[in-house]
Length: 314
Image (cartoon, rainbow, N blue to C red; front, side, top):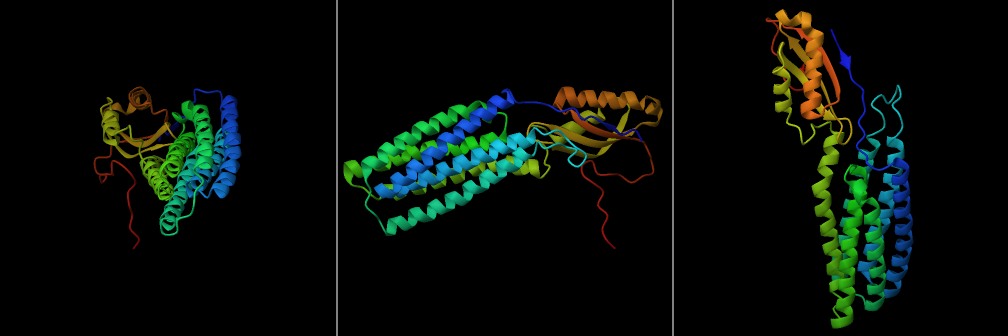
């Protein structure tokens, strides 16, 4: 008996959504223009690193386009078929962006290694000027998305694309300078390989959080055992079991649980439930809770504290 649902949403975005959309749209525009300039420059200068940077810049633009539409979808209200709302569109977008970064990095790694065996002449000055332009655009994009990236893994994925690209531009400038000063064409593919390794390292550090949300894992800042213990410390609670703690979307924890109420406290069951909800909200900032109340049954078999009972097929 006594199921209770709390569907209050939480907004963690500090920027007006429309203003945020304009920032992302502006970042998309400058990145697309830059991609065209870099591809043309890379072809005419013979620089693989510049083309690598252009491809990464194009992926920046794609990442931002995905992030832009994910933001739009995520703001849709919940409906009967999508009762949890559309907030996870941003988490899915982040996973798509990280996956494309992995594919891109592996491709750049391959191209860089092949260029070592078949070196080509590079026009150093053209490389330096176009990479300098790229760096300016990267810094503009970073400025547009930095504050938004703190509150959204979706925008953070696009921002990481951009930061990696800014470092790539710096590396390309170094490669161009090495050609101008010393005639070292090998620096170009070496820089390409370093860019790809850096991107892979960054993706590795960020993609786990995205997968955890999609896999309904407990938020990293919350200890499930600590949450369960806090519930059981509320007066009148004999035990808690079948506890599920997950994230509705980034920074929006949710919990469901079965609460066993001591027989002598059953008349206070509703107030006990309210007390549990207050503990969860005040101590752990869990605002979305579903609590099922049960009278203690001394002869029932023990239920798992977390997860479900597993019934094996005969």
